Length: 266
Image 1 (cartoon, rainbow, N blue to C red):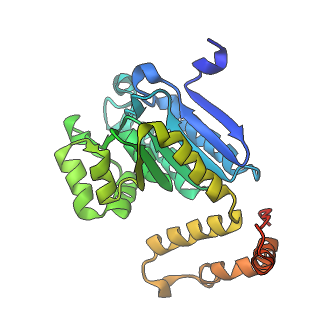
Image 2 (tube, rainbow, N blue to C red; image 1 turned 90 degrees about the horizontal axis):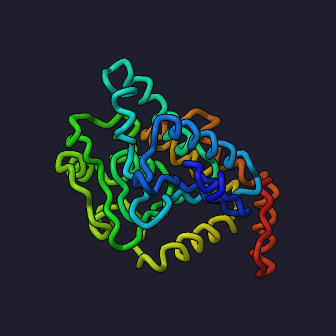
């Protein structure tokens, strides 16, 4: 086995799509303390690469996307509130990085996505799950609660009632139930998961990257300021900035000329 194959996080960049794999199949791809920060760093690097227009996040093997936080860390990093504060800051940094990325992100889920693994999937833009996968946040089984950022992301995705159902029951939901409540966007047969996910990633990557980035920023603004009258003039003008880009001119000409556009991200 090569040194690369032993790394807990693998990055494969084949522009315009990059893949990050949580690579601890023997531990059901549990995320340890150091990995929260490394995942944030790797994602930030990919987001800064203009050649990367979509990022797929997945777990190694077929058993788990990620079983969440590594229980082996708890004595050292989560034994009390002081240690827990440091640990939670690392988790928040990753989730904030994912939420603020201009580059679209997709979770490709096969097997379990539990606890922090589910929270990571929730933070990405889209979630494609293989049939037979199970998702949930059984924090109450450990006597802990989730953080404010995780709660905000979960409620924004599935609503208050479904968020409480997930948290209060402590259940791992079957993929079809997760689809029904909006926890995942699509469920596909396991043998088609890879093809389905990367077909979607390719479709996203073929469209205007500036449009994706601005749409994500506008979505974040709308969630932060539900009253549109509270938007600053700069925020309110954000959609208009697209009309001054080369990509808009290219998209407009390509539409008139009935040809595929060639977007350059400028």
